[in-house]
Amino acid sequence: MRTTIIFIGAVIAAILAVAAAGCISPSAGPAGTQGGNITSTQQGPGSGATLFPTVPLAGTGSGMMAMPGDNVSVYYAGTFENGTPFDSNLESPAPLVFTLGNSTIIPGFEEAVTGMTVNQEKTVTIPAAKAYGDYNASLVRTVNRTGPIANTSFTVGEIFSIHDRTTNAYSAVRILKVTPTTVTWDANSPLSGLNFTFRIKLAGITRP
Image 1 (cartoon, helix red, strand yellow):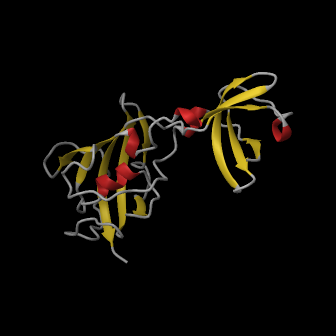
Image 2 (image 1 turned 60 degrees about the vertical axis):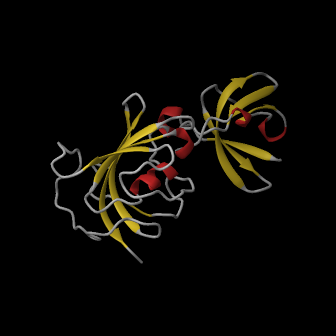
Image 3 (image 1 turned 90 degrees about the vertical axis):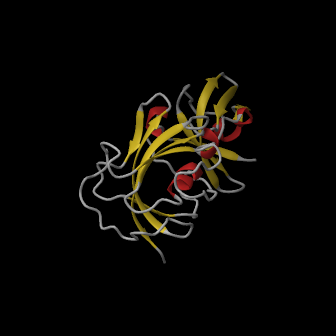
């Protein structure tokens, strides 16, 4: 495999601020059930204070249950396992819109939304396996500083983009160790191995 490396100049903290996105998703059962090892807690009318927008929603899809193929609109707030917030669209003027089943978000989030009804709220705990995956030690590699990276400067902790010339694919890696002759990097997502908690409100459903 021939690769080139392009310096991005981003730090891990910046990557941790990205929105949940990017994995294939299985379907889930009706809202309020457990899908795999995802746990959820329902929050219906009168169940207490809500952190979601209080502006009346259009209620599109009222009475429908979100199913694969539906276009759904959601508000959400995500935290790490220790309670630290990492992503939210509560301050956004519009909810997140995506199609259930099109693999544009992490599978656990999609499972949680599947089966919800408009204006329903829930809190879900999503394990690493249904988020950005478990940490994979085989993705840590030590390579010789020859060829296209012979004269590249590396700093431990920096993020680089790896270009596979064979497949023309790009992937981000974090530099772990640098010596005069080798560099060790980690191709795991900075979010791999982490569990998340999301509070979700389904704002609308439309069907093609």
